[in-house]
Length: 164
Image (cartoon, rainbow, N blue to C red):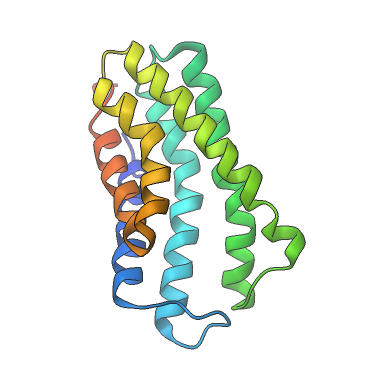
């Protein structure tokens, strides 16, 4: 399978735990602030090859899975831009970059929904529900939200054809 899906799960878990034990301040004022932003950046960046790995392990996804994978990867890339700038600047990114969150979140939801359809078609209904539900649930849970994404990525890491 490769290192990507477990790395995504680990980065998301670190982000979730760090947010539960430390409230981030921007501009950064402590090591905890850096840890949170670095974990978020690592999560977003590793999710791009991570989702491509998951797609490769699920060859029967078809067109919905292909489109969903592309949208999901693009979403993470878009959101990674302002997050990486926040990490580099230790402060809020320019407003023009912060505007990338909205299309990024929309693409994330659309991609996850299409991958969920692909999972239903592959007879994996739990992941068919979990994929499109993970982001809204993570947003609802606030600081603990990344733990939802971590659980999703652990589950994704164990799905598909791992004999390849």
